[in-house]
Length: 169
Image 1 (spheres, rainbow, N blue to C red):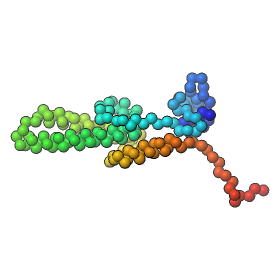
Image 2 (image 1 turned 30 degrees about the vertical axis):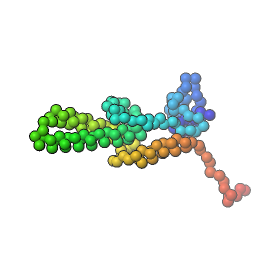
Image 3 (image 1 turned 135 degrees about the vertical axis):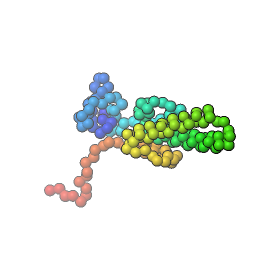
Image 4 (image 1 turned 90 degrees about the vertical axis):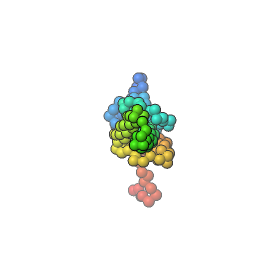
């Protein structure tokens, strides 16, 4: 039986792989149609690279919250690394070193990753109202486990049983 991937209501699949959900009052595309009350599949990309931060904001807005949280962890680590490099350059300049070109490049990269962190944080706020102030490996593992657990839950409507203590007349 085909069901709505949002509410679990039974739907009729039309010839063009569309359906209409009467409860949600909307047309469903193929990816929104499930079977037997299963939830919609959440595609989680686990492999995230710092290079992904160079992608457009539009691209990032289309990614899963897990992807964004993992990318935010990488971006924050890179920003911290660049900040430490700026501190070292500043000390080197004070000691008479000539790091002006390197300093400028690192400063520009630091600004880029700071702004990219803000972009990712704000996209996460749009998706889930909050962004994690601290991202640990445990937080990422727990997030994946929750995705798997919730994906296995079915949307099945059950009426309460009358129970042994109730009497019928």
